Image 1 (cartoon, rainbow, N blue to C red):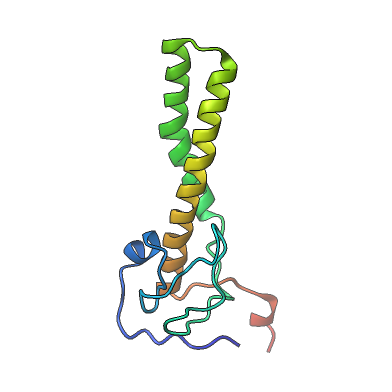
Image 2: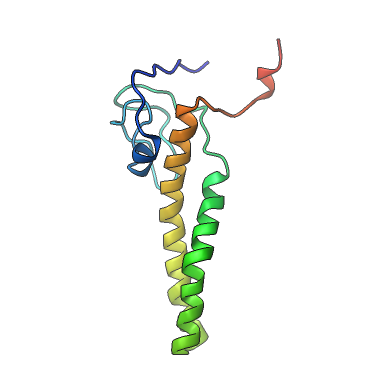
Length: 129
C-alpha cells in the first residue's frame, strides 16, 4: 500500500509540473529519464509508483503539434518549394523533437494535477472486499 499524501500546502500543479518537480514538496525531481517518473521523491519521500498521467498528455501534444507545427511545415513546402525530402527531414526532426519536449512537459503537468486531486488508476483490488 502506498504512503498517504501529507498535503501540507497546495503547490501550483502547472508550475511544479512544467519544472518537473515533486507535486508534494516542489523540490525533488519528478523524472528519472526523458519520460519515466521516479519511484519516489528524494526530498520528501512521496511515493510515485501507483501514479499515472494516462493518455491525456499525448492527446494534448497531438493537438498542439497538429495545430501549430504541421501548418508551418506545409507553408514551408508551399512557399519555398524545396525538394520533398528536405521538408520531410527538416520538419520531421522538428516535429519529433517538439513532441518529445511537449510530452515531458504535459506528463509533468497532468501527473501533478492528478496528484493534487488525489486521482489514481482504479484497479480490480479496489472493488474486492
